[in-house]
Length: 117
Image 1 (cartoon, helix red, strand yellow):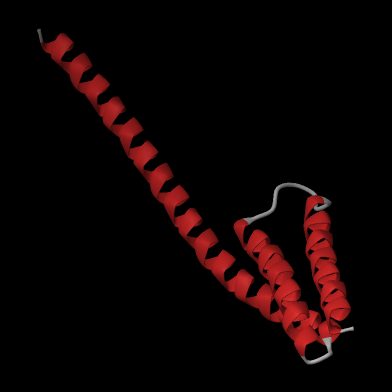
Image 2 (tube, one colour):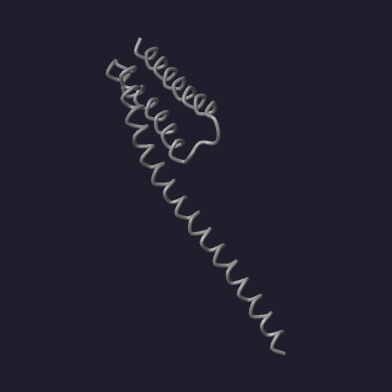
C-alpha cells in the first residue's frame, strides 16, 4: 500500500511540474529571468513537497507548501539574476556609446588634420 501511495505521489508531483511548464509555455512573449525562476522553483518545490509530504501521508498539502516555498525562493534567485542581467546590459550600452563617441572624435581629429595641411 505504501509503495502504491508513493508512486501516486510521484505521479502527482510530476504532473504539477509538467503543468507548471505548460502554463509557462502559454505566456505571451518570452519569460523574464524572474518569471523563469518562479516557475522552476514552484515546480521543483511542488514535486519535492509532494514526495516529502507522502512520507507523512499528506502529499497534497506537501505539494502546495513546497510549491509556494519553491516559487518564492525561485523568484528571489531569478530577481537577483535579472538584476545582474540589467546591470550588464546597461554597462554594455554605455560601452557602445563611449566607443561611438571615440570614433566620432577620431574622425573629427582626422578632418582637422587634413584641414590644417
